[in-house]
Amino acid sequence: MSKAFKRICVLVLDGFGIGELQDANQFHDKGSSTLKHVVEADPQLKLPHFESLGLFHAAGLGSKVSTDSKCLGFYSKMTEISQGKDTTTGHWEMMGLPVQKPFSYFPNGFPADIMDRFVKETGVSGYLGNKPASGTVIIQELGEEHLQTMKPIVYTSADSVFQIACHEEKFGLDRLYKICEITRKILNESPFLVGRVIARPFIGEKSGAFTRTGNRRDFSIKPFGETSLTRLKQNGLSVIGIGKIPYIYDNEGISLPVVSHSDPEGIAETIEILKTQRQEGLIFSNLNDLDTLYGHRRNAKGYAEQLERIDQALPKIMEQIKDDDLLAIVSDHGNDPTYKGTDHTREFVPLLLYSPRFHAGDFKARALKTRECFCDLGESIIENFCLKHFNQGKNFLPEIENKLS
Image 1 (cartoon, rainbow, N blue to C red):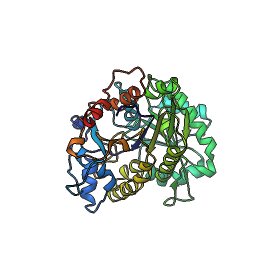
Image 2: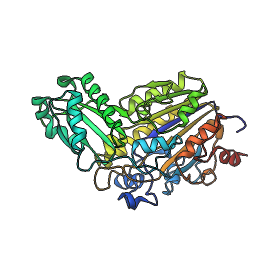
Image 3: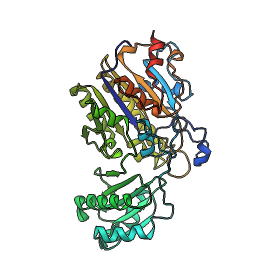
Image 4: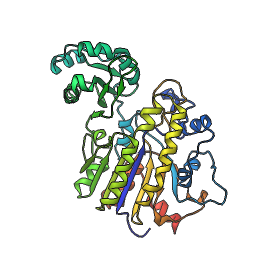
């Protein structure tokens, strides 16, 4: 590996954990293990391309591939040190910004003073809900009343989120986005640290028939400090954010945002960007369906089927990775679809690395040290492009070079 990579593509499989962290009990997640339990729920699960990159070895689950098979990349697992287990903390930490002050959570709904400002400043006649809830359940519960009153449905979850569900056609998508912008401002001016305000549009005419659309939009709190993204952009490198990546960082450090509403769209956009954008820098893509459609809904069978669909798409992504490119497949947290409740789970996440430059090798020889924090990813990216490092993580690229030499 005599030459630094020209492009690094980070593909985030949202909500894909590979075993409980040491502090899982503090987060009420003892015994969670997303990949292991998905395999147990669907013993016929086939992930040959993930396996060729060392996924099952990284998770300590051995492998289903033949003993003479070779590993196409390098693999490890990463430890989260941030005080949380959600999208924002996971993504910020992997780009060099661990979150040590916990975000605010609202198990009893949002305080009266916040909701009073919400009504006054958005101009709505009131609101429905204001409680923790499943997004798919609460629109069935309150959707008809929303259509009758045009009052937004407000809810939260175990994450630090203020979610607003409104009918996309009757209430209006632009109006929903506008009240989310106002809500973001209200929360920014409050003493609370709320990670995201999320617009949750839905369609349908009656309870039981309401469905969410793909026009979700996140309005995130700005990162508290510099990230690998901002440093890359400041130094003239390209930073392309696909899916919800731009929203997670409030567009800080993003030079080109690319919209996608589903995993198939996100995969297609990632492949197209890899084909057409050859400038030096980072391609950062989030695939959200494992988390949103299957993890939170505790649908282990659906989770397994979605993993297989992503696995089937991997060769098309890998075909676009050139000798001077690096593909890193990671996650931001776990979301064990067999675990109690509907929340994320505090787990290790995979780190799977691929470049044609690596050639094939013995699986055991391709194991990297367990990463002590997600920051190792951002640190490795920064040092790859010869930029001043953060001292928040350790660059894993020299370890790869030593194993190849």
